[in-house]
Length: 420
Image 1 (tube, rainbow, N blue to C red):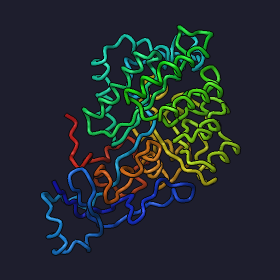
Image 2: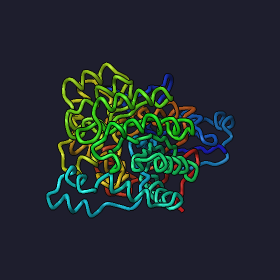
Image 3: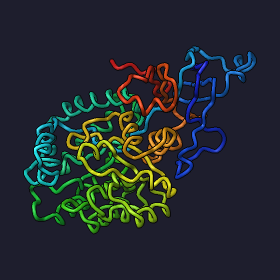
Image 4: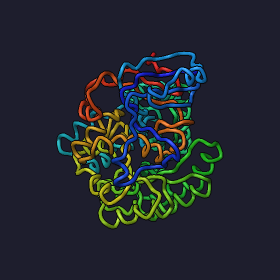
């Protein structure tokens, strides 16, 4: 079915000619905009766009749209690409939130059996269908916030059986919703209780038992490691990423969240598609990233929740690095999948401009999931995933009005999405 959207006040994040894979440094200030435009979709793809003045009677005859939608001067931009989430989990951890407010640290909560191990216990006890029901509620929620593509990690299983359960549920989200889903195996999220004091043996299990089965069943696109003191060392990460790559799993890394962990360097060594968190980054990490094809992905929602110092986004961009922003939606450190709020934090706390924020949450997020050829911009041949705004005064309004309902309609795969 062909749909023609007319009288678009601003058609934002358009690409014509050669498509970009990502935007780095000063390029993140670049934003293709067509004033008073139109957009044509053909089934699930974008097939044409331009200025209304180009929409002649002859051109309309050639298009032969089945439906015409008058946008009435509103803005249109791509849906968000959220490249780091833990969307599949059981239960919640609000008690730990208040433990933190009483003064307990993230590490202290984890040492008491809370944190990731708490989520692992809850997940183990949950039936797969119940886990899917919980995850689908969150999936529909993030679509309503404007997300069209999402990465979902395992990592609350910490055993082969439960990691497989998580990844199957993540794949099923892509079947039950119009979301484009990428999955990541994160068996190295924490050391399970059965391996207390024997971390290296758990790493052996990940390498010899988990990776081969998960790869054979084609349940994961990527492999990830939480590289941090008290979790997994650089040496552990090196072993796990090396093993994963032998099975075709490209790395991602939880890097430098709580310290200068070496996670950035080992991630770049293995050509990680992204290194995520990055609250602790300096000149050495900047240099290593600048010489790589790895995306720096920042998670300001978790930074706020844990009351940490924010990643130096302004310095990264000024250094010439590409930056993506994701939610890190999870029960322990960011119980929110709202990319609009992450944009607000990116502006307020990381001093990013509106144009930089749109690039960070669209094309750069798409790149961090390997979706840059199909998502993240308005371009001919890409997925027809876009938002129509309510009447808003400017692009700057988008990160500014973080609790306003400025999204009027959402189209995914060329169809109007309705949260039923």
